Length: 143
Image (cartoon, rainbow, N blue to C red; front, side, top):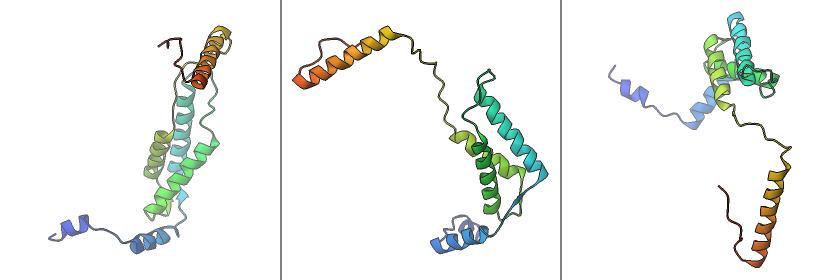
């Protein structure tokens, strides 16, 4: 108990970390039945959330994400030198994958609005002309 602070503040050398990682790589963890069910459930949750409960297809969450979640789960089990992937490993893999997914929620762009597009092209041409003559553009910016 007297050396508690030393054990908490311990720093590892590169050699110690390398030895640990090489040891951990020897483990080939297998999924338990509970972990398999949780993995499928979490994947379904990601796909459902990606569609936003609408009729759109879920195109961002694919089988690749399921495979990634499986590999991450196995990596966490290996990190803990475990022979079996537990629910805890799957939950952490889900959390990391969920945080890494970028969501951009913006309205669809209307490509049929030709008037706006022509105005933007006119502005771009004026900007190009101003840059060539080193004069400021005469048209004010619309914010």
